[in-house]
Length: 268
Image 1: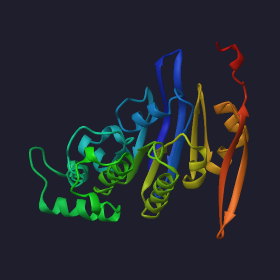
Image 2: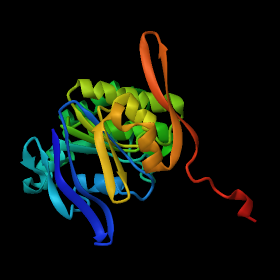
Image 3: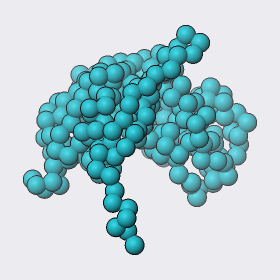
Image 4: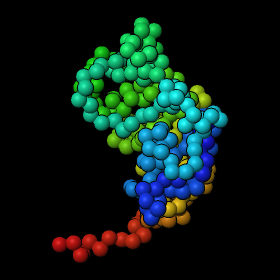
């Protein structure tokens, strides 16, 4: 479980990204974090991982304040999946996944046979066995994203933080990532996902946080992802839609127009 209590972050007192932000994400739940570019959602994610420090407030993991944990204990509990970008390093897929066990490997030691067995088991679960020996700089961006997810999961963390894991994918692979998130929730993993897609929040997240300019809103996703909030926080008028197929209802958002349309005729 993740608990964030009365947190804020600002670069200067006049440049506040968020303040008085509190939330709780229970075991097996997903929180989606949304906001326009520059609103502070990436900074919030960085603060959760300790890459930046909250100016006020604190975070707890299973009732323990994160700042009291050693780095090793912290990273045993939390895993991070960055956006997949091309890597120039020639580590094999197996070697990359083994790196996820680093909190359990003493400084200066090499991975054991047991570590490689854990990595191969995760590779099999993620459907990556066919590329296990290939260098990570010779696989596609979609494959690399799956490898990064496998690397994050191999140590069996309590919390998974994902930074736009579906943003560079085609529709099929986006749905694959979303299905993985729902499957991980069933394994009692707590997930925080930073995303640009409100429809994806509707699909996988019990709670949604939208960060805006000096304000935020958080609550149950079906209440937070609304035409009113999309207009207020994103400047977009939209229509909520839903579709039922095979006994399953999927909700989505149809953007209709900008609240403040661009004056294109003024561009020469």
